[in-house]
Image (cartoon, rainbow, N blue to C red; front, side):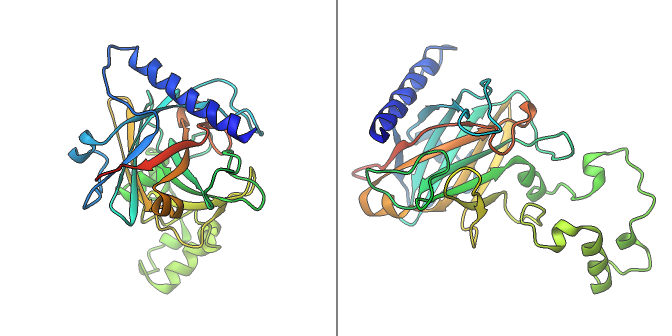
Length: 289
């Protein structure tokens, strides 16, 4: 059954590739699987010109109709994927169309995001691409547009969400407390409980990517350390995101592995399990380079 699912996934990706090529008069050479080109130094920017020569794989995104909360109407349909490797790390560039930039989280507002996933252990018998299985975990690098905005300098205060808001008084901003003092920090923790208990979602964020582990839907947990990094840019109604992570062990040892991808469109109120996703897609290190 898993082999059949993998074949269908590859066939679906190929169909998606042909569909994209047939619309809009775009002529772009694409590959049936992801090919990571070897380079001496990985770029830190998704718009670095080195990406112009990297092979492109166009993946069809599928509805998340397996677990609640499901997404039963398609939003983002395709994601363009490129990869580069320097022998120790893997850089993956994802780009997709999005008519609305959503990078501000607030009540009733959801952020754009994407993720790349690898099985912890490789081989022919892979775990389910829906975030793995019990005893067969997957590694996920999750990029958030909202975290990217904070890394790029957006203030972490209520005025970023509601520019017209008037704050009468926050105890930890009281004039009697010296900014940065232990008293001011202690007061801030009291009135910002998520930060006080170390909730990684609350930040602070020094990077827009978080490493996660999962062994099936509902089991997502932060990795002990985040070794991935990334950078995203929004322009001309599309996102382009670079995610860099350590080279997956299976890919490093055999030159081949499988990866899966997900995209969340915040403007469509997508969050958590409500996302567009792929099945497993083969990824290989380019031979002879």
